[in-house]
Length: 97
Image 1 (cartoon, helix red, strand yellow):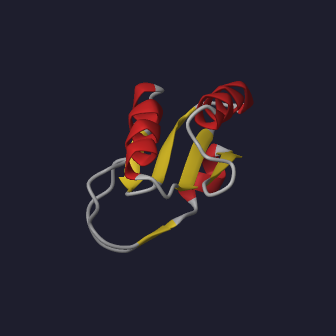
Image 2 (cartoon, rainbow, N blue to C red):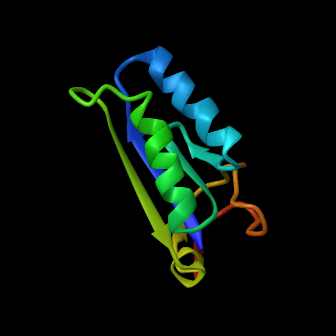
């Protein structure tokens, strides 16, 4: 399973804390506010609880999805970004699974 986390956090300090938290929990940064890593529902709940302590419920939002591996393998990837979910390295370009 793949955990995908996307957030919109208004304050730079909270945003930095959220980024460090997600990376400390084993997620890789795919874009500025998009992270992915291996895990299931229990890990996703742990991430949600930890993010709740950082986010301002009035201004910030985070979405956490748990995807089966086959859904992740069907994504369309455009560009040559460097970050990848462990075990899913691909060469630069457009990839349609």
